[in-house]
Length: 418
Ligand code: AMP
Ligand code: GLY
Image (cartoon, rainbow, N blue to C red; front, side, top):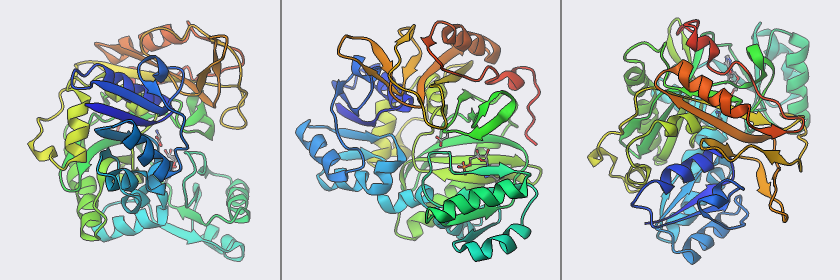
């Protein structure tokens, strides 16, 4: 089977790596890819936000299956365009991708499906902001209603900071969502969904803030681990039954069935799991940890999802043990990120590339905010963590930064569901 992966992050490198191990894959391409995917797959430059360009590439390359990594092309209609030319696609339609692309739409679907989530109000007029802020907080949760690459959210006890963040969004013409604050540990659950059937993968935890101890601004994700040693037995089944399946059923009932990866971002509160957000694609960096533990060939799972045959596919099998991902970010990230610096030490197994490119002289240089995802696996979470940080220490990139506490509290038994 010829498989074309769309995207250029470490998530796509992880997907390409898993697909490259699968004997069912006879040819592999990644567009646009990065210096890491280029070692495993053919690379094609393409504008990922242009659905017809992706469909044309899929036809020209004679793809049997297209796997769309990021949300932006999905929301723009990449999966629709690929399916229209008769090629199987892993990824939801533009209509179903609104579960991520519009937080207001997601809230509406959840309300109709009876799924627990934070109470929210949309403010689209600065004159109404102060009264709305008085109905929330502390703590205030202020979000951009549209796609914001994980960086559009402010969670703060400071009313002035909440107001300032909301005003910045409003001045840019973006409606603002105010939400009640959800307490409790966070978990990410990825589910394969083929319009009707839901197959959960291993639960994971992401570290969204830039600094150790969850200090500093939100990012796209600075690290992750899977599975969750502290999760109560039955958590995954409960989340599928009470949250994911009802949302999948609701989307199908609205004539917008979801096919692809539905990612539930959860807060495990004292009154049970509640949804922080849905995403319409694999999460980054959790995917790098989750796929490191997958033993079932990935292609079959993705193809069964894309062709509506998940119910007949054997359940995924997982390695025992754990995996930890640590993101190495460029100086300045999540603000303006410095680029063009030479990276050394990134050749080990398990070092996945994101913002990298190969210069004409052969050197690998930084070209984005999140530069590398370093994955360690082991029989236990502490062993996986040690392996990840051992490899982080091999990498040199001037000015780069990473968190030193990914999965640390979980290894000490300090994380509880509440
Ligand atoms: P989002 O972009 O909606 O995933 O939000 C990014 C991060 O902000 C989440 O991973 C949480 O850490 C935090 N967050 C978002 N919404 C809430 C909420 N209602 N209560 C508490 N934390 C939240
Ligand atoms: N890990 C967060 C995200 O992919 O949005």
